[in-house]
Image (cartoon, rainbow, N blue to C red; front, side, top):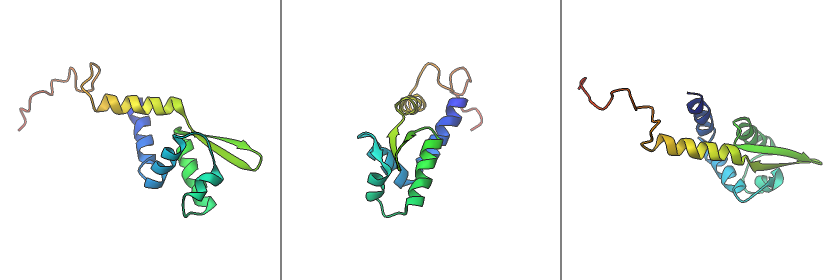
Length: 108
Protein backbone atom coordinates (compact mmCIF):
# COMPACT_ATOMS: atom_id res chain seq x y z
CA UNK A 1 0.00 0.00 0.00
CA UNK A 2 2.88 2.37 0.73
CA UNK A 3 4.00 2.21 -2.92
CA UNK A 4 0.53 3.38 -3.93
CA UNK A 5 0.55 6.23 -1.40
CA UNK A 6 4.02 7.45 -2.38
CA UNK A 7 3.23 7.06 -6.08
CA UNK A 8 0.01 9.02 -5.70
CA UNK A 9 1.93 11.87 -4.04
CA UNK A 10 4.28 12.04 -7.00
CA UNK A 11 1.47 11.84 -9.55
CA UNK A 12 -0.40 14.58 -7.68
CA UNK A 13 2.70 16.77 -7.73
CA UNK A 14 2.94 16.19 -11.48
CA UNK A 15 -0.65 17.42 -11.83
CA UNK A 16 0.64 20.85 -12.82
CA UNK A 17 1.92 21.24 -16.41
CA UNK A 18 4.75 23.55 -15.35
CA UNK A 19 6.08 20.96 -12.93
CA UNK A 20 5.91 18.31 -15.66
CA UNK A 21 7.86 20.65 -17.94
CA UNK A 22 10.47 21.24 -15.22
CA UNK A 23 10.96 17.49 -14.73
CA UNK A 24 11.28 17.17 -18.52
CA UNK A 25 13.94 19.90 -18.53
CA UNK A 26 15.84 18.09 -15.79
CA UNK A 27 15.89 14.91 -17.88
CA UNK A 28 18.77 16.55 -19.78
CA UNK A 29 20.79 16.97 -16.58
CA UNK A 30 21.29 19.28 -13.65
CA UNK A 31 20.13 22.87 -14.07
CA UNK A 32 20.54 26.04 -12.10
CA UNK A 33 17.31 27.65 -10.88
CA UNK A 34 18.12 30.67 -13.05
CA UNK A 35 18.13 28.47 -16.18
CA UNK A 36 14.74 27.00 -15.29
CA UNK A 37 13.38 30.45 -14.51
CA UNK A 38 14.46 31.70 -17.95
CA UNK A 39 12.05 29.24 -19.60
CA UNK A 40 8.95 30.36 -17.71
CA UNK A 41 7.08 33.59 -17.12
CA UNK A 42 6.96 33.33 -13.33
CA UNK A 43 8.54 34.96 -10.33
CA UNK A 44 11.44 33.44 -8.46
CA UNK A 45 9.14 32.77 -5.50
CA UNK A 46 6.69 30.87 -7.74
CA UNK A 47 9.54 28.78 -9.11
CA UNK A 48 10.68 28.10 -5.54
CA UNK A 49 7.17 26.90 -4.70
CA UNK A 50 7.15 24.46 -7.62
CA UNK A 51 10.68 23.24 -6.87
CA UNK A 52 9.83 22.76 -3.19
CA UNK A 53 6.92 20.47 -4.14
CA UNK A 54 9.08 18.49 -6.58
CA UNK A 55 11.80 18.08 -3.96
CA UNK A 56 9.33 17.24 -1.20
CA UNK A 57 7.88 14.31 -3.15
CA UNK A 58 11.43 13.11 -3.86
CA UNK A 59 11.36 13.40 -7.63
CA UNK A 60 13.93 16.22 -7.70
CA UNK A 61 17.10 16.83 -5.70
CA UNK A 62 18.51 20.25 -4.87
CA UNK A 63 22.02 21.35 -4.03
CA UNK A 64 23.26 24.81 -3.17
CA UNK A 65 26.39 26.29 -4.66
CA UNK A 66 27.09 29.87 -3.75
CA UNK A 67 23.96 31.94 -4.16
CA UNK A 68 22.37 29.52 -6.64
CA UNK A 69 20.46 26.29 -6.24
CA UNK A 70 20.99 23.48 -8.74
CA UNK A 71 18.31 20.89 -9.41
CA UNK A 72 18.43 17.39 -10.85
CA UNK A 73 16.13 14.42 -11.15
CA UNK A 74 16.39 11.86 -8.37
CA UNK A 75 17.22 8.84 -10.54
CA UNK A 76 16.24 6.34 -7.85
CA UNK A 77 12.75 7.82 -7.42
CA UNK A 78 12.33 8.12 -11.20
CA UNK A 79 13.03 4.38 -11.52
CA UNK A 80 10.61 3.59 -8.69
CA UNK A 81 7.80 5.61 -10.28
CA UNK A 82 8.52 4.05 -13.68
CA UNK A 83 8.22 0.61 -12.06
CA UNK A 84 5.01 1.56 -10.26
CA UNK A 85 3.49 2.89 -13.49
CA UNK A 86 4.44 -0.36 -15.23
CA UNK A 87 2.99 -2.44 -12.38
CA UNK A 88 -0.35 -0.63 -12.26
CA UNK A 89 -0.80 -0.78 -16.03
CA UNK A 90 0.25 -4.41 -16.53
CA UNK A 91 -1.07 -7.82 -15.59
CA UNK A 92 1.67 -8.88 -13.20
CA UNK A 93 1.90 -11.83 -10.82
CA UNK A 94 1.62 -9.54 -7.80
CA UNK A 95 -1.29 -7.53 -9.22
CA UNK A 96 -3.71 -6.26 -6.61
CA UNK A 97 -6.55 -8.21 -8.26
CA UNK A 98 -4.86 -11.63 -7.94
CA UNK A 99 -6.53 -13.93 -5.44
CA UNK A 100 -9.50 -11.65 -4.81
CA UNK A 101 -11.98 -13.51 -7.04
CA UNK A 102 -12.91 -10.35 -8.92
CA UNK A 103 -12.97 -12.03 -12.30
CA UNK A 104 -16.75 -12.41 -12.15
CA UNK A 105 -19.34 -9.67 -11.89
CA UNK A 106 -22.14 -11.37 -9.96
CA UNK A 107 -23.39 -8.03 -8.67
CA UNK A 108 -24.39 -6.88 -12.16
